[in-house]
Length: 279
Image (tube, rainbow, N blue to C red; front, side):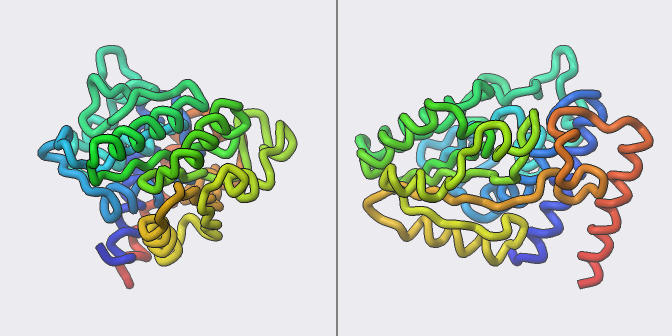
């Protein structure tokens, strides 16, 4: 896809996030929106996947380590054709297969159930090692929150990945600077994130703008070309990206917009869509 096509799709993914969280009256819009461009690039450009055959053996794997941002993953999967976009409005409803955290038993395209912070990257390491041991060619991607990396298990996994030289593993940290209780630097600062991953023998890419598809494309290409060590992409993003009143506002980490706020949010995204159509 061209960058313009990716921008348009990312805007649709954002609409799905806002609509599903509003319909659920609960959920995590802020970190879903900050990662929407990463989700879009992974599912529409980077990964070897097939929505018609979600379990194909040679598919690339993705683990949403920050599982609470399931609305972002679900919206990307729906727009990619894994299940109907209309089903996004059943998010968190009783009996829906789209619950608050991804479930691999029920959601097409989900490779790992996640939500307990810190654990997803460990699973991704296991998948990557499994590929190495079976001489399989697939790659493994995992998305972490910058607040999530305050968990010690993340660094145990990083030590393992570096030691095992898992160059088929790509770790992405959504560095939007905010977690549920405030700024990450105030809660329990993980900075400098890049130096920490380097210390565990990762190739580190600082993605200055995680909403710029030229930069995103270059980062994933560099990761793919890196041999002999895993890659960590530190993706500097804006929490709540695309919705005026949610941007860089910690209040929108984990709550749903009311009807009035939903109308404003969708109007914001419609304006973005209209502007992209003029290009």
